[in-house]
Amino acid sequence: MAGQMAGGGAMATFAVRWSSSRTVREALLRSAVLAGSLKEDEGEKQLAQPTEDYQVILSGTQMSAFQSAEEAGVKARTLLITKKAKQRIEPSKVEFQRNTDGKTIRGIIISFPRRTATGEATIGADEKGADFSCSPGKVVIKTSFDFSKMYDSQGRDL
Image (cartoon, one colour):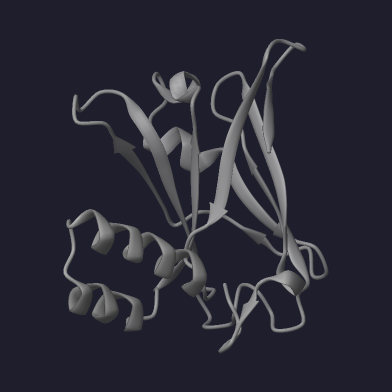
């Protein structure tokens, strides 16, 4: 997925992953187990826990566009819009992941609520996809998620 600088500037490539899915969480936890930073039984326990929110991880080699951004600013300029119901889902939380230097941003975890304030699902069972947009500073990042392709052995995998 590519983000383009405002005004027709240079292109930068970003990875946007639906990280709350069991498939992605399993892969990340398995990677941590293989790297020795997590015990296998702990990984299995974490995977068994349902996620409270939908989570999207945004990363890329050119994260400099976010260096001057604040988490609150990114939160205010990020949105999911479901394709069928046109439900606008604003993030509940944005968290910057930083390198060991504590300054350089290596990724951004964006959480979206699974339920509205009245308890209704933010993404209905019949929803086939959603459009994601994030526009911190001069960068505009957009992509679409096709829920009809997000299934595993347990069913829908969001």
